[in-house]
Image (cartoon, rainbow, N blue to C red):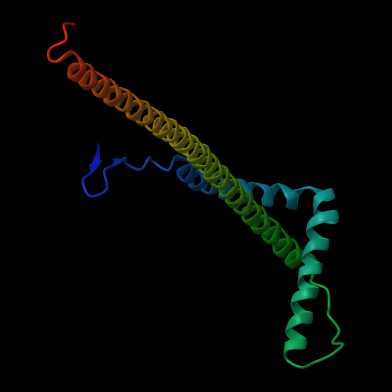
Length: 187
């Protein structure tokens, strides 16, 4: 609905918020991504190249960082970190990569939503600036028109005063002629 604000005389429009399709799409993608991540995890474990060059090194690296941080927090320095056995490393690395995939997807979707929202706000701001510039131009035109109208009124007032003087002079001459001729002067 729309109307006019009685207090300020401003036009307003009420709109219903739209269905957040993008957010529903993001939720759907996240739900679909979980089974995909599990499938990637299974296929990665079965691939020798992925297992040897991605999963195991990632698992050992994460384990080393985890144990090093924990031992330093407990006050131990230079503690030796033993490698995980292959089965534990496979499970840990595959789980880490699966979670990394989900978090990366979530972060990507969040970044996409932020960019989309920012672009939308930027477009609104640009539209507001254009509208404001249009209003400023209208104000300038109105000021110029008011100035020109004031100038015209002043000029016409001066012309009226001049005509009134001329009329006064004519009345004076007419009175003088009446006095000389002794009465009425036919026109």
